[in-house]
Image 1 (cartoon, rainbow, N blue to C red):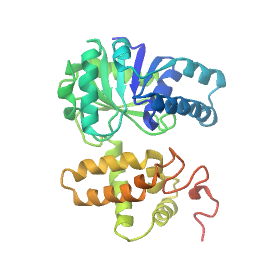
Image 2: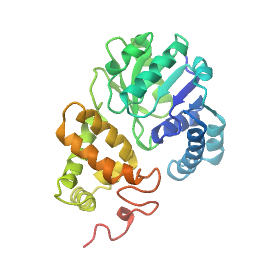
Image 3: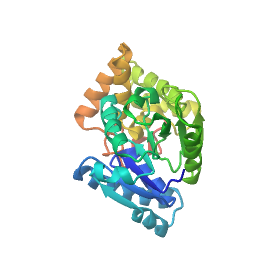
Image 4: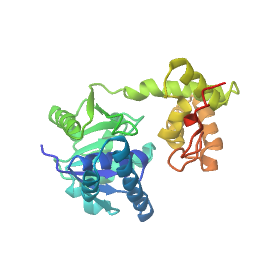
Length: 299
């Protein structure tokens, strides 16, 4: 089962653009799809920025970055491009109904042997499998933000995923310099978010419940653990919208704490246009966030 052409849906988003760029950088032809011309312009801007980050953070050479961009074509006509893909990776918004509609439409267009994958950070394959024709070719591939540095790919199968498809995606992940993490049983949150989201949720509850402020939470964690990793810094990187979507999924199941967090994120971040590092406004302001200041962790 050969993979030559990869369609990445949601290429204008934070992770979608990174997935597309990473795959193109390692020599595959990539169809970068998004819903309209505005999103495609955003995708192109992101690719240029990613090229600069690959050079500064990944020791990439300009000629390799240029070759990666040359390996991409940008498209808004899904019906035209889906039949050409050997692998389709969905990285669209983390809203179940949107994903269901997407898979229902593309699985009718995709060639039978094409592998179909979701980058969902919170939904398991069973939530979407009934929208995919030939479910044995379907699985999930979850990437972490800044995938060229945090280069894991959590690969989750379901009961009907064929062994051949599972093994093919493991080998494909290796070929784009990812460390494949096989997940043999469906697990909400996979491995990464099963560890990360309780951490972020605990931090948010400290603020939502009026215990303290975001900077104090981050300072406490950074000083006490001697790490640059901190919850509100991480929310800015992941994006408040993603955190909101995940918490709303839990709120819709009756989780009252998740509802409080979702309301807070919407009121204090999303409604005020604070989308994190994506637009330079989040819990911190960019490009010079307070946590990079030499005195952030001092008295």
